[in-house]
Length: 73
Image (cartoon, rainbow, N blue to C red):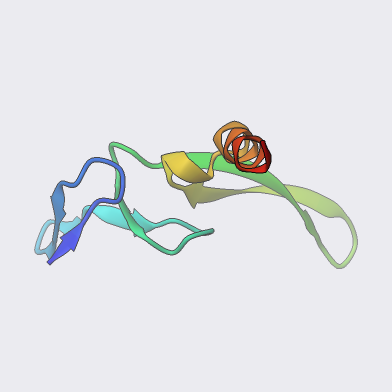
């Protein structure tokens, strides 16, 4: 059984559809209540564009930067 990385809720894939997504960075399952999206620049053939990727709360840029700074101190 899958569990949400953030809240620990059991996740299932049933007849009503999928109730979770994977974090694009750490590849852990996260429920729709706790998923966040960050915009990233993608290079296209003719121009650059912004796309969004799903991430968990731990992989948000500010939290990740704060965690890296704390580890170095």
